[in-house]
Length: 517
Image (cartoon, rainbow, N blue to C red; front, side):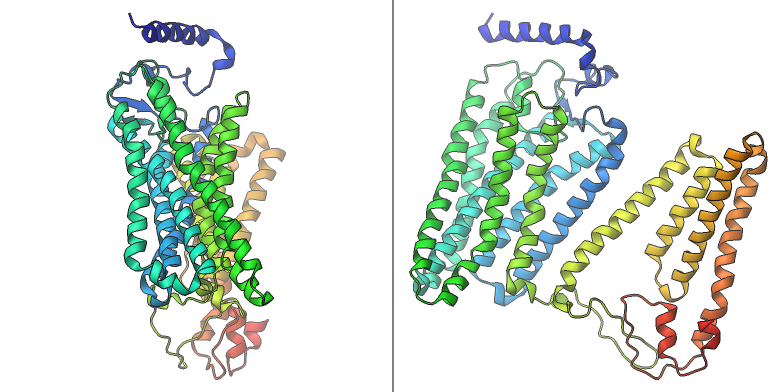
């Protein structure tokens, strides 16, 4: 018997003994459901979400989905802008496109298993899929470090040798740098992942994250993993740490050159072009250092802290990079997206109105829309999940939850309506009526509990709901219907990005006494 085999058997026996310890209950091995991992074969692994928080996985998945959506939207928009605008066809923006593509790659690699684990409780993953995911995650992490180094080189040439900038950083050379960064990362990680296919795996086959990482997989290997433990340290020091040092020294030279510029305005302008890159560097390397310190010195910290830090490492830089560049780069701030997302030209005649966004902030409308899109997605997800839970769980088929479903449906209606002129007021009155119905339900439940089920039958709840909806429609139709016959003879410009009754009647040339009262 090999020494490592005896050690593995000893560790396995110790691990089994620990099953009797109460503090292990609810840990990542899910002892409450041992069949889930005992029946798992050596050809697959089990992913883990947030230990001891399994019941809250659906709710945790909502903010994660919003962050994922924001990352896809922000980085995707950057790629569209750089591709379609010839003014952005410069080395600086080519490297930015590489950074955005890397962030998208990390997001698309981790998103399916994370949301599948948290939302659908789909935890099993095949060995091939797991090793492929680990390969792309680690490769893209090194690619990001390499792209940040390339961007530092771009800034160094632009400030220290501006006259030769276009001759040094040609399109061909930029492409070669990009291919070199990608090849370096891919080849450096390949030996680690290839060896994973040869290892036998024993024990629980339970990983500690909702995605596959090399350091998690090798803990389950019943083999000599000395190479897989030492080689990543060499890669980190030879690439990531070396990249960081080169970036640091390049900025020392950039600062030295900038301080030698006589004009204060030109000096500030030169340094201002580096701020976005410096912020991205700090975001990336601070999260790397934070994750390293947690794993090195936080061994006694709760497992949730380690898992949360890993999510921050994979999600925070991709989320922040497009925000940083959209705020600090004037060329992107002033970019018009109409050629990326074409819209029909408005015909501002008497049969149409002009909507208004944020007056004075027209150039930032596209970025403001990202935040509003995130809010809309959050509302749709939150309320949609509530309706789904109430519908499918028979324990929630009670008057209180039926009224809650009506309230949630009203909120969804206010988000999804396409004619706010009529429907926004209706849904506002409906929501007020549903809140009144919920108050009545609580009054009966507390003041007359014995007759609660007799009074609030399903039929009665349905009648109350229909009455609330009918009241809203009837009360609003009388002031809204005359709008179709009114003549609008003014500017046709509304003061919001949606149609409201009070805004429309200000533009009419008719007697609006009824509509005001």
